[in-house]
Amino acid sequence: MKILFATGGTAGHINPALAVASYIRETNSDAEILFIGTQDHMEARLVPSAGFDFKTIEISGFRRSFSPKAISHNLKTVSRLLKSTGESKKIIQEFKPDVAVGFGGYVSGPVLQEAVKLGIPTCIHEQNAYPGITNKTLAKQVDKVMLTVEDAKKHLDVKGECIVTGLPVRGELLKADKDFARKELGIPDDKMLVLSFGGSLGAKPLNDAMFPILINSAESGKYYHIHSVGTNGGEYLERFEEAGFVNGKKGTVEVRKYIDNMDICMAAADLVIGRAGASSLSEIEAMGKASVLIPSPYVAENHQYHNAMALVNRGAGFIIEEKDLTSEALGNKIDELLSDSEKLHNTESNAKAMAIINSREKIADIILSLIK
Image 1 (cartoon, rainbow, N blue to C red):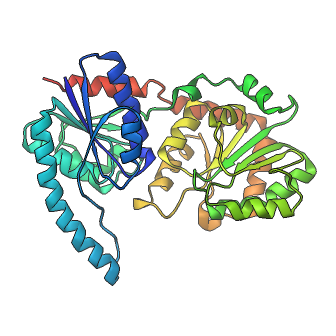
Image 2: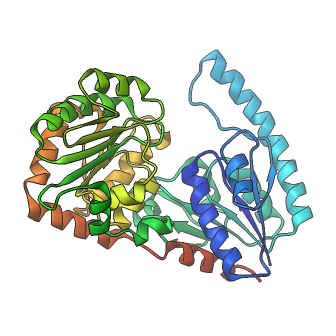
Image 3: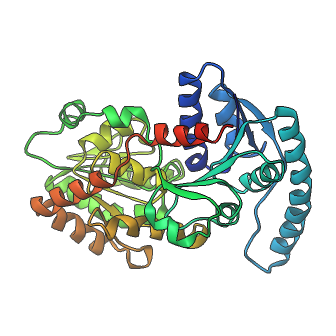
């Protein structure tokens, strides 16, 4: 049994694919798995580290601009697209997969299109509520389309079957216990905990809005708060130090560069604040957390807004668009939710109801079902 995975660009595409591939490898001793990606993105490090064979093609995305630099880049992209088609075909003919799977990113395009031409069963997974251009194109050609949320279906013209599978969530998050986590972090029973982060790199607008909130919270001690400024947010750590924080801590507030025990912090939290990437939202749903979402407006198709609205429309979260983000607006929303236990509980329940905790297994079953 040979399975070909095509994905790349961001961890949000790569990690779910690795979770599914690992599950297939664990449960099928005869499975041969090959990943195709690019040599200059995260997949070149993450895939071999996970113990999977990895081959590369040269491909890049188009830039939506008419600047001279963008035009030059797009001309190179056309050349790479033509080259990657031949590279993909060669790899597929050598590997001879029984099924080909696309998990997003522009690398999926030429690989899955060549697999279709060669008569190989194919499927794709779309992680966002508003699909990207690559998956919109592939949905018209592949045998099955898997979705994280039902909302994506209305934006797709599909050839085959559309199935809601959810998005795989790390096992340690599913096993996390709130009482244990709060004890680990030293949170008293009579205090609530807010967790906020802007992704691994951080988000400047969120850090700016959060700074006065955290300063006030450290002085008032009304609730505990853990905030990550991100690996690009070193300047904020200096500002907090100037405000009297010692090793990132003051009163009931802790500021970190990066949260490396997310399973513990999110399990302990009563309210989560952050961006609206698909992986983060799947984790919020799986753990049944109330959230205030601040979608990044800088991503393709504004897909984070649509991701957030999938929760908001189901009473499973709240949204503040970045254009409306101020310290006052965010601080008021935090105070409102922490003082309304019924609203908080209902939001948690609705988020939990959206979770598909066996997503990894569902996706693997669909992939295997395509093997002739």
